[in-house]
Amino acid sequence: MKALFLVDLYQMWNNFKFYGAFIVVAIGITAFSGPGEGNLGVFFPMYAVFMCSMMSMSLLQLDEASRWNVCAQALPCTRRDQVTDKYAVTLISFGVTWVLFVLLYAVLAAMGRLAWQMMAVQSILLLVMGLLAPAVSLPTLFRWGSAKGRVIYLAMVILLAAGIGGMLAGLAELDRVIDLPELSLSLIAALAVLVPIALFAGSWALSVRWYEKREL
Image (cartoon, rainbow, N blue to C red; front, side, top):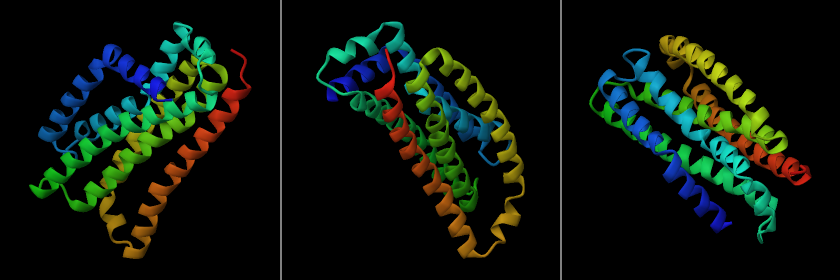
């Protein structure tokens, strides 16, 4: 499995360098606009996290285009290892991006440009976005391949746009949420974190099951 992971890292370095450039631009725009001062400061972090969390989909498309997914069956690794590798890549690429934006939010909050409550809410929203998108898309890719997976990807982009619109509207009403009892806020925050994690784990198990039954 280590070899599979190294292959994906090599692919990422050679084919997706622009991801890093986009993240730098997104961080700069967010820092100057402020995540609480307009749509740009919210849209770019969410889109950057979404894009990096879906990197495994691009890697799977490259694998199928080069027939690597078929050749890999001759290697001393199981299909479970191949699925686990892609989910690990997802967690790492998404996790690094998420941490960078959370650190940026913390700096803005320390400077007084962002309320700490808003920082927590937006950090959780990024977490939800980064875990739910691949949790929904990856099982279909492992089951039916990247051709049909593109349809799922487009659907996720549409849902992303709609979701960001709803999130922006929700953030505008944040003061009402903050008035809730502290216990209710803690419960909502815990569920918002635990549910996507549980769905991501369930997605991995479903992907393993479907990929082991798929004919390549």
